[in-house]
Amino acid sequence: MGLESPEASNGNGLKTALDTVVAPKDAFESLRSAPTWGWALIVAAVLLVAGNAMQRPAQLHAAIGTLQHMMATNSLFSSMSDAQKQEALEKAQHPSALQTALSYVGVVVSLFIAALVNSVVLLLASLAGRGTADFKRLWAGSMNIAIPTFGLNYVVLGAICLVLGPEHFQTSADIMRSAPGLATIVPDAHGFLGGALLGLNVFTVWGCGLNVTMMRVTSGVRGAAAWIGPVVVLLGGALISGASANFTGI
Image 1 (spheres, rainbow, N blue to C red):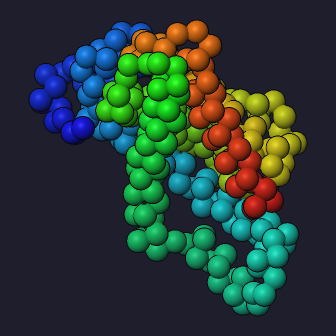
Image 2 (image 1 turned 30 degrees about the horizontal axis):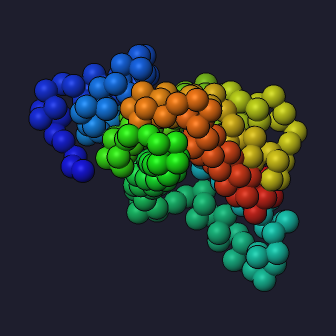
């Protein structure tokens, strides 16, 4: 498995990345014979960084509300003095240049982690369903799928944050809730349920559908077996989101 340069793919990698959004069947047919992912990484990373920059003012404003809520409800903060709590709030509101840089590095790192988890789960599902795709094809497909599920997700949320303004978001969950999905329909759900609903939005469901298409087209898995891995990924992400929300209490 290698990261091809944009030039080495003669434009096919870029076409595949774009086809993942507009013509997924064509994209996954291409990935079956030429598992390219360099252009997909570039496109997804650019969208993530741009979306993160657009969200940044809202993130900083929401971080204060999130931290204040956790200080009031989470026992982990009970041993902190008022001065320590105030210092933590100041750092959250005015992060250092290093912390800001790490926030951008973090979204790109999350891209690799998500693609890896997606690839492994789908590989296991493919083996169980007697599919033909190997890891490198599922990795390439996962990285291309990250364009809509992560990249476009971040940009759309960024646009919403710019339109509504930072003051609209009282907690980090408010930002995530802005992505059209089940949490938008049930805005009063909090804790584990609310967090799980945050993980089920139009972008994650879109990603699930693309995973099903990849299982069928790239791996040749037939019938209901093509759905098992993608649904595990979708619900697994929702459960992780629910656990995170339960910890923060938002």
